[in-house]
Image 1 (tube, one colour):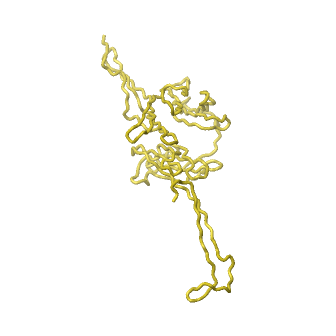
Image 2 (cartoon, rainbow, N blue to C red):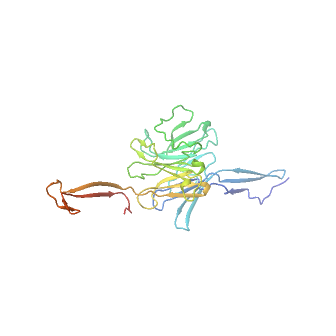
Image 3 (cartoon, helix red, strand yellow):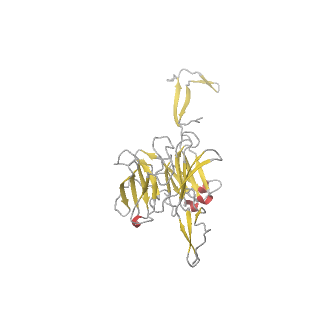
Length: 329
């Protein structure tokens, strides 16, 4: 009877083609922590059969790293392997062990629902004042579902399934350029208040627009929602040199250059590049005229024009500008 190869590694972590960086998140503060995930990270398990053939089972479990940039050459890195069944990890940035108390696993009757495929957090209307978490499971019951979690109490608030007729009220719809195959909305991120009007703005990616060059759109927040007309559009074809798949991932809301305006980071995987677009300061300009004297006497001719005396006034054009920026010149 064959006993098997005792020197077999048993398990090998497969890092090739893991797509590390496909999902990124960073703390909005100086020396904040950064989380980077690669959902195609896998490990291979080797088994020796009685006939002598080795069986190789591959488990794409995914991986997330959390690190802090200490210096240009030094990084403090931690590692966490998500659960295969679908798990939502709430990381308080003080530890990165697995499992943790703030770990939500959807113990559904079906595996591979992809719970946690997309996550978000915020204050939701009709719930209490604490922060709630939201996790998407796009393969649940073949229609998908969204689960709202009470992070503080580690419980579920609500499950919303895709087959329901009106699970949520549609408040607003934004369609971009409506280009076929653009995949507008593949990436969405709040980008802070980039125009200093006290409303949060939004950046949306369309990574396959313009024949695959990709594009990002900036939409400005307003009192009643989001202005449906984009404020700015940046195409991968307009960059120097041009790139492909611009907008496959977007992240905003962090002031990278210290000018008190949030900047936007954008990924382009076919170029193997991430771009940082810096917001420019907004300048408010007030203009007015000053006239001296205030009234004109036609008989008082005090100005010489080509040898002839004329009545005149002094007209001064004035401009005043102001803005929020540490580097406003």
